Image 1 (cartoon, rainbow, N blue to C red):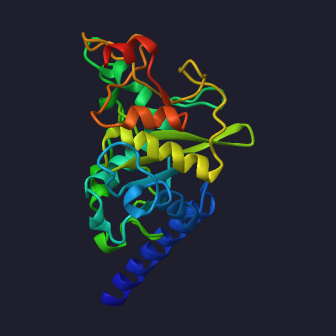
Image 2 (cartoon, rainbow, N blue to C red):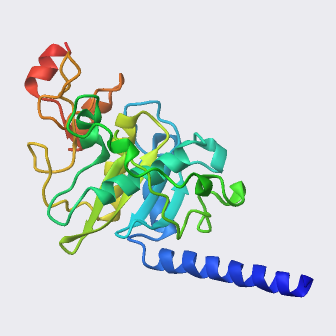
Length: 259
C-alpha cells in the first residue's frame, strides 16, 4: 500500500512538473528575460525611479488562455517585496488579458473609474474570484522562481487599479503581465517599462487620447472620471514619470486643478 501511495505521489509530481514546463515553454517571455526586464525597470534593483515608494516589485505573466507562465521579483529574495503582491501581480495579469482583445488593449488602470459604485463596471471585481487555495500552495522559498507553484495554474482574479497590461506580438494579443509592490500608479509605470523592454508593447488601440492603454489621470472632485476610464493620482511623482515615458496622460485642465 505504501509503495502504491508513493507511486501515485510521484505520478502527480511528474504531471504538475510537466504542466509547469509546458506553460513556461509557451510563455511570451522566459523567466530570465522577464527578471532582467523587471530589475532594470525598478529603482530598488538598479533601474529608474517610478514616482512611488520605489519598492522592489513582484511580476507575473499569463498566456492568452489565462495560465500563469512566469513569476518573478526584483529583489534578491521573496520577502524583499510585499508578500501579498505576488498574488496581486498575477491577478492584474489575468485582468488585463481577460479584458483586452487583439484590436483593443485595456489596462487595469483603465478600469478604476468604471468599477466605482454607480459606475458601469461596478461589481466587476466579484465576477472572477481568484482560486484562493493556489495563492499559498507550495514551498514559499520557490515563490518568484522558475518553479513557482503558480506556474501552469489559472489563478483568476480581477484588479481594477494600475499595474496590468496586455502583451502584443505579430499583430495580436499573446497574454498579459502584472506588476505589484508599490503604489498602483508606480506599478503601472513599471509594467509599462517592462513591457517595452520585452518588445511586447505594440498595443493596437486603447481608450486614451493616444489610442493606447496608458493611465488617464482625469478624476474629478466628485470622484468621477471625465473620460470614464480614469485613475486617481497616488500622491508622488508617478503622473509626471508616466508622461515622460508615454505611459499616461494628465489633461490640461487636471494639471491646472492640481496646482
